[in-house]
Image 1 (cartoon, one colour):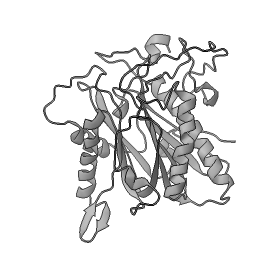
Image 2 (cartoon, helix red, strand yellow):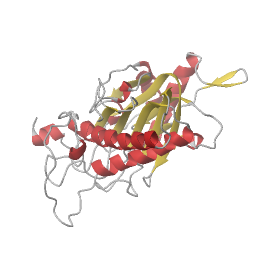
Image 3 (cartoon, helix red, strand yellow):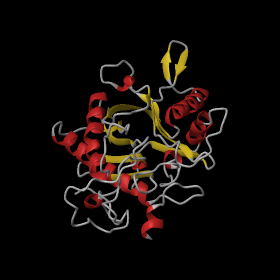
Image 4 (cartoon, helix red, strand yellow):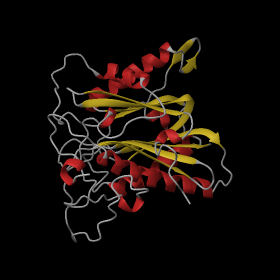
Length: 329
């Protein structure tokens, strides 16, 4: 049996820390995941329009084996600069990959398109490096969900999106968690109802406890917003996985995105998942343990997506209603 962790968040994976920062006028923000020590990471990209920094470095055949932080940011391509702020903060702390006498922080990043979320885009100096540093400095093992950090300006086809997280403790003792900025071209809810696609994965009423919608309209085309989108996520575990194992964890987690968002992985989405392992707990069964870790990662990501939409809060200038505005609760 798998049960949620104490926080029901990715920081149930011991050692991981998350920080958020946002600009209300910009209607955008940054979320940073870091740790008490460097960690192993991989990536899987299934969307047709990704925006990333240093993602090639995460391939199993590349030299650097660990990273210092991961960044999820709004701002489309401008938001990739959030990693500059995180990198500067890490360098100031003397943290990074040693190259002779030099320290180079390794900070892969991914972005969502939230430029059309109703925020003020009239800035002259890119605001994202400062937001990245602020998010890093706000890091801790507890954090808010919904319209915060990288989820501040996130939207779905019919509702505001947001930042979501969830966790599971496996019978093996391993912990798995997910963190996601939900900014989908598709919808997290079934047709014109309050029911989430991810309802079969829900635990302890974490996104309303409404249960599944029993019937779907045969052949119905799900609502979509034909424009910039992208859902970006991190799944993490305390299991001892190498870069190939982290890549497989991220790949399996994409099933959770497909369960929670209709449609997902479209040509206009940059949907991707980072996989993270801290290595604190060994693998006892090299066949069964990785299988269950991937299964848990998919469940966590589906739940985290629904939670991100469920926890969104209204703000001045929003272009879409929140789930709570539309359906109550």
